[in-house]
Image (cartoon, one colour):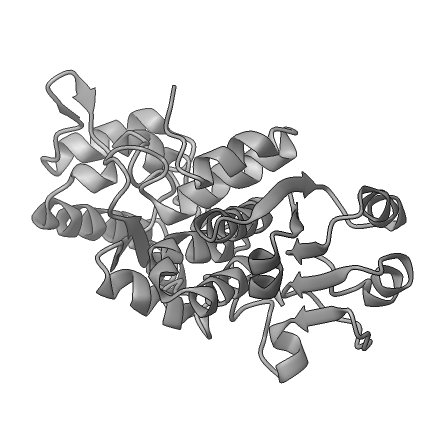
Length: 313
C-alpha cells in the first residue's frame, strides 16, 4: 500500500506520538518516505482522538500512517477516514477489520508489545521491508524501546524482536553492546555525580552524597578529571571499571545491602557508535530520555529533528 501511493505521487501524512518511541518512529517513517521521493508531511501529537481524526479527514491526504498509536481506535478511524490507513503500533489493540486499514501490531500475532518490541521497532521492520538499505535506521529502532523502558531482560537487556534489531545494528557497526556499571549519564555525567544521583540501587552513604563519592574515587585511585574535564563512566579503562565495581560492592555489603542490590549496579550498556563521544546521544538510554523530555516539554519538533540527524547548536 505504501509503495503504491509513493509511485502514484500521492500525498502521504505521517502522524506519530510525541514521546521517545513515537518520535523515533516518526523519524524512521519520514526517512523512508524521503528516500523514496514521496510527497509527505509528518506531525506529532499527544494523543489520537476524534478531533485529530476529523482534522485529518478535512486535510484529505491519500494515505495516512499512524505510528505509536492508533491500535485502540480502528473503528473511529474507519468510520471517519475513507483514505487508505496504515497503523504501526505496539499498544493493546482493538480487533476491527476495515478494507482501508492495514493494522500492524505484534499483539495481534501473540507477541508481547509491552516488552518485546516498541513502535519504533515495528517502523524499523517496516522500513527494511520497503528497502533493505534502511538498516542504517536500526539505532532509531532501538531508542524507542529504550525510551519505553523495555530493557527488562537479564542485566537490563532488550528482549524479543528487539534482539533482531540489535543484531542488525551490531553487525553493521552502528551499536556497541556490553555489560558494565549502569549509572545514568554513562557518557555525560561526571563520575561522582553519576554515583551520587543513583537511587536504583540506593547506595547508603553515597546516594545523594557527592562529596562522599569523590572521596571514594580518590581512595581507590580513580582520577575524577582528565586535564580540565571531569571524567564520565565512559572514560574509564576496563581496570578502573573493575576497581570501581569492587569498591562499590564492598561498600554496599559493609552497609548491609543484599546481593540483589549489588547486582543492580550492573547492566547492559547500549552505545550508538556513530554519535559523538561524551554526548547524550551516544548512550541509547540517554538518547531515549532526551526524546521523552522533548515531548514532555512540548518541544517534540526538536526531538524529531534530532532523530532526523540535526546536530546543530
